[in-house]
Image 1 (tube, helix red, strand yellow):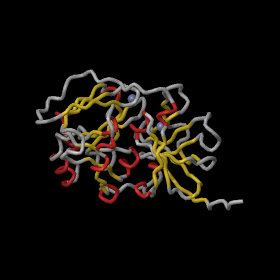
Image 2 (cartoon, helix red, strand yellow):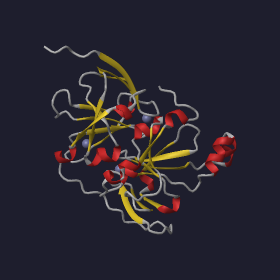
Image 3 (cartoon, protein in one colour):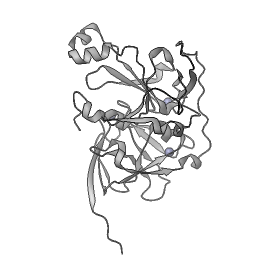
Image 4 (cartoon, helix red, strand yellow):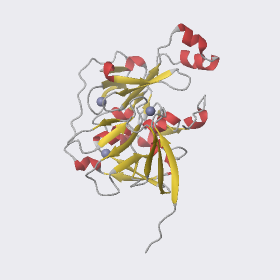
Length: 290
Ligand SMILES: [Zn+2]
Ligand SMILES: [Zn+2]
Ligand SMILES: [Zn+2]
């Protein structure tokens, strides 16, 4: 009989800290990356804790989203949008709960071995929601139009940007700061006039740290859409540190978009261009794990 591996205790949480859990599992060295229509938009990296998960705080606070036959509940925090876990009672024992390892404190997800999981084949094909709004007004030579959406279709977007392929000249980034790691963003950096968002009313906004930015995610399915300067009052701007104010002033026309929202788009074409940003060590103020 093989010896059971020793168990390690991990603590995890959504970014805002409303939901906190613990895992008692063998050391996490791998995670599963699924290519289904929802996982690709959320950047989920799964581990299966079996019976080894305990909720420390916030039982019942996560919002559930289901699709297809509604078999798997995807649980995300309605306040900060962090995708925390999936639950499917029909999956084999030990596989009913899938936790997003992006939510685990102190785990370096860039060091994990990633197993590809073809979840796409489990359900009927996904028909991406269509964008039906106007074109962005920006005038950019050689630009292409890309459309994207959240999963449920309440929010859609159109982005006018240089072709996102091996010739793409600008930055594409993923970041390990407390929120980017959890949200699984793949950032592209268009300006405001390069993007149109449809269904703004269906976004929830999340603000943290120095309050200069706000992240938008779909209220219904939790897919993270974009980042934008947080509309602040004059008093709030005055109250910022000089650094934060200067940073904000220089980026008022920025409109970073999560590339994962793109529909009918093959990420493999640009994945070798993705830069890794050490946002965890740059964050001011630093994030305190709850
Ligand atoms: Zn939260
Ligand atoms: Zn999936
Ligand atoms: Zn949605």
